Amino acid sequence: MTPSSKLRAAVIGVGVGWNHIEGYQTHPNCELAAICDINPAVLKERGDRFNIPESRRFTDYRQVLNSSEIDAISIALPNWLHEPVALEAFAHGKHVLCEKPLAVSVEAGRRMIEAARAAHKTLMVCYNHRYRPEIVWLKGEIRAGDFGHIYAAKAGWLREGWIPTHGQWFTQKERAGGGALIDLGVHVLDLALWLMGYPRPVAVSGATFAEFGPRGQKTKPRDVKPAHFDVDDMGLGFVRFANGAVLQFESAWASHREPLQDGFYVRLFGSEAGANFYTGAPNNETVVMYKLVNDQPATIVPRLPVGVSGHRIAVHHFVDCVLSGAEPESPGEHGLIGLQIIDAIYRSSQDGREVRIESPESRVQSPEFRGDD
Figure 1 (tube, rainbow, N blue to C red):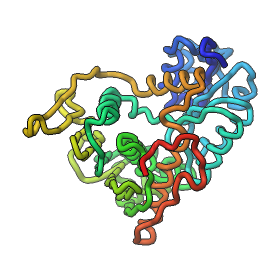
Figure 2: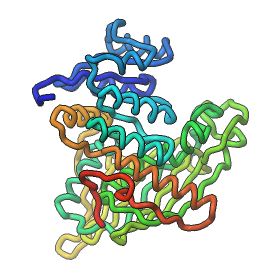
Figure 3: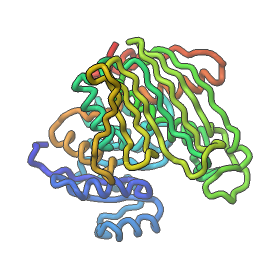
């Protein structure tokens, strides 16, 4: 595919995948060739909303994969379907943009990466929050060397009460892969790792809790009865890296805390500067940088655009990478590292001990592992 070609893309799963539709439709070098959803009502609503002809609407994803006119797909399906649909897509020669988490297990994530490499196709994880203006600005300052070396970070996403679709796949370990950790925690974990330079994790300790879900409390919607719930509604982890840096992070669907709070945060501690990113900050001051200027503490608050869709920018980045042959900034390998850390937290919680984590490079050979030893 040449840089001047138009990419023909499809979105499979348009309930939460509407952001992908918008991303493809707004890229000048992309054509949205199809949308697919098993739910006819959702398919119609999204198709009508985005002016997609009925001839490009499908309820069977295999019809999309079998089309020789489609180059790439977005997978915005329930977690347990990510792997099988991705494997079929690679077998049909498609590039894949996959919603987080990459898969429901470390082994499933490895199979997806290996299939992408065997097919010589792009596999990108849609970590949409990386593409927020605040994170892009922070990453630029870090790359410029303004932070020195980042030796510690804290990150979290704690909700007061938002256990989703109680009793359905979200709260079933086999189908979801986990609870709050793999739903919310995977986002803040990726943000911290990305800003730290994806250092190689070597040891993890953590704990998980299920205090509200089993009782049917703090659910969305609120008026549900206790149902199947074998995942965590809160998880905490502590990660040690090969370069000596550490990360502490937390996530919760439900907790006794300030009501109506749904912000997430990342705090960075570097040898030359620090920073605090918090989506719930007042006055749009979501990112603040701290450093010494003339040996005096200084606070830097950048003025950045608001209302920018991270999903749209992520989709545009995926299109650009496929057309140019470049490796995406959030490759499948990064999704796998997140799964390894989360899996280690679950094992640490169960066994009550620190867990040594397998090197991402020992089983998955990345052409460019973005991390510091």
